Image 1 (tube, rainbow, N blue to C red):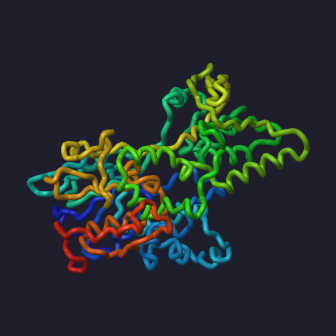
Image 2: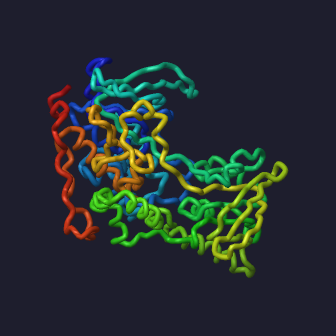
Image 3: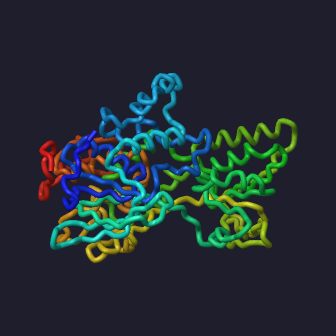
Length: 470
């Protein structure tokens, strides 16, 4: 473990991380043994938690356990999932369980174990601004230290040569559904907060789940299992034209390899935009095991005759929504294929409507004059996950899970976390502490045969050599 103390309070850091989700946690874990690399990571939350509202009993992570924070870049790291099991004396039970896909709650426990043991992480720190100081050739990062109640306790500033943004995503609510969020007396909950409100939702006479992706499927199944047979009173609807399975064939999964990421980055912007929109089933469909479990549960409820009191309808979108009195909401629905409309009155709504990348504008407002943007005013991101800035800015700003428009569907995928973190650290250090494979897929995605390996980072601004201290 790298416990090299920060030299002096005024000395600049090599890297400041903003946000501590799985991706920056991966970066922090891989940076930890690199002696001489001075890093610090900030997050305004009191501790690490990974989608706590969706840690439904039995729900599994959709990538194998090998896609932990570090293994695909450094299987010998002390921060692997297997070493977590070893530290908790659970390695033999896991061996006999023969599980390739672990439960979400177990992945969350693993990440919390890493977060609790890395010295570079600082929670209760809200980042207020990031600026470039041209006189010192450094970034200034202003933060507010929060107390146990989340109130401002102190102000601070850190200087750093480089920054990495891992602020993650935020719950998304489509415009027609926004009036529901403010409906007093009626439980309208985004899927992100489902478990915190499950008992309130179950107390409603009728419940509607909106969204036909994985989260919507898991929540519908959980509600179904908690409702009495014949009196389920559940609606499940969404915009997609079918309860579509997620693409999980082996060659299909090669879209989540470094090879495809590099190929995608080299495409023209309009082509990339069309591809992202068309590839939704690679990451927004429903796991086949979950659809099977739903069907099994519904079938079980027909054994005594009759059908469960539940409606599952794809291809439907909500035109408008509003509150009726104080205890119900009304959804105005439209079926795209039939071109028909109807109304649905319900006592509770779960919005399984997904997530969107958090806008970078608030934190990076001070860097706006230096940022280069594409034709849609999105930040340009180069192949090494660096924001493209004005050449006068000699420091680098890396992004994690804010680059779907430049790097494709793999940007939010946990399976690419370790590779992306290693790519960033190789570039940051000007060395290659984590050698990366030159080829990762059997598929050749373009007419050029083979994918070129990303060369070692240019040494135009090399940090202090690893092992020499700072």
